[in-house]
Image (tube, rainbow, N blue to C red; front, side, top):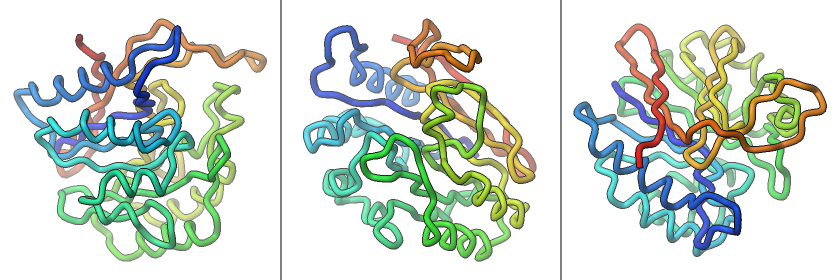
Length: 253
């Protein structure tokens, strides 16, 4: 199985001065996937689908994704609006999820995919309330099949202090659940605009870079939030039935 992951496209209708054309970047990523000799089985977008969560931005997002020749799985980030996202994709009823959250399970692939909603309206950082934690525990307990969890906010500190402040606030609660379910092969995240890996709960957290632009790498505790020169990129995750390997691809224009 080949799973493609895009993250943090931050689609806007008209790019502000000094910003990259995020729609152009996402269109290039879609074209790159469609041109692959070995086409992925599914595309996973791990949040911050739009920049402002407006209906117009989600309409443009839908247009940009329409040429894709593979199924698409969406989940929200802190820049998204659950209601506007759900309204823009009526053909995806699973986005109405569980308990008012955009979370659901994909069962018909070699890897089981559990989509988890970590967002808090009006907040940059993420949090998993007791309702969502219980849903995750029940969902993982329901099947021992190899599983990946997809969510926007990373549940670990990475040393990127400006982003660690707005990561998942209660990652330790999620880690305790995942440690009880050894079938979890990976927790796939976005949010950081960088490629990062970390051990977590007996498995691995991987953070996908952004199709928009990348965060400047600085591990200094007082480093400001700034974008750097690294290329926009996305990832391919290959599951061979025993292990998951990850490849990062720069965007080609």
